[in-house]
Length: 446
Image (cartoon, rainbow, N blue to C red; front, side, top):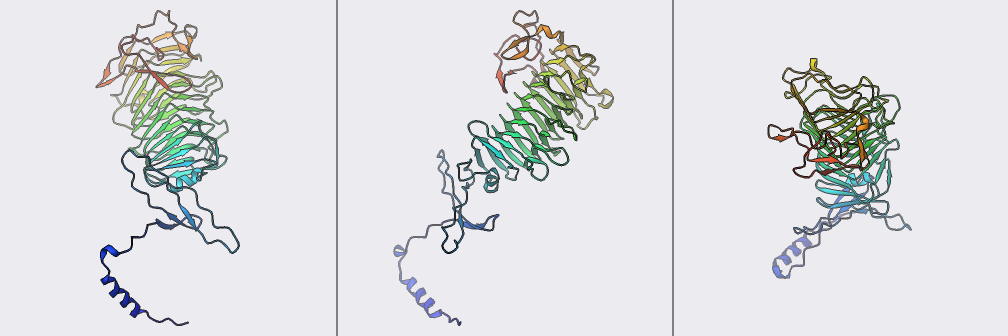
């Protein structure tokens, strides 16, 4: 076969083009999108998104699979729906995107991934986007590891993101080294809201990058696995900038701690951190490297089956951060084990300037409370378990006729930060604000 040049035709067309006026030119062709090869080796056309006016609802953009059908076969099927930046990807059994893994593959910075109710198995994912919202829609969708993990670390790995994860349940995370987390948070700013973590070797496990921030709000943690291996902490924050936990419930630990934090700052407020009758956790709260720690307005209770006599531990592994202080204020601490300690301060491992303020705590049961660090110790009251009554399903409240009602003094401020609680825990997970100006009582429940 031979080829002949078509130069004359080109010259003729060129000369004709000069003679055509601009108003007579044909309309510009519609851009269909860009073509790229997906992970299955197929070509996909990704349609370019139209500009969305301010306040308008974003639309979903659908990628089409470019695949030639074999003779006699039906046309190739379209690939699942994808979303342009700032758009919404909907995941569900009856949706074009039926798997979370596919959503993770096509998501872009600024997208929202909405997961319909249902059970999703073996959906391990590494989220690499820089900005993302992942939200369960309707009844909380349940993710079951079923032997799957991302990078041998977790069901989900958050690489480095400003991310919100909301209304999702994680179950069954296991990995060979025994530290299988539901969520492995490596860097960025992660906010976890109204989620649940059950039967995972670790609920949430963070890395140790000093700029990372982890916030947990209105979430549930429990049912630590009982198999041998590494300690199974329900929440473990490494040496990050800040951990904040509010309105959340922790129970049913096993040998590990309910909450362990090595963060520079740890802010633990308005939670129910009670191991329960079936729990066998070690510490309820541990801050092994000190740091600035606020523990305000929590109900914290140890199981009679615990293998560790301490409820709150501070400084067991020595100093890591330049500022070290513990503010233990308006908590209800429950310990029914003889010889137990409500608070263990490892003074020999802390710097001389470390302070502890323990104010208006309600100490219930048989534990001892004798902190010896410099600081403030006012309004802490020891009562018998029988002195408490049930309120809204929480058997940790002072009865309305208690002589301790409304007798707590104001805990004051640290710098510009108030130590006065502004909310209290409510079941099943969450918090409710306290009335402004209400006279406070010792303990968490007002």
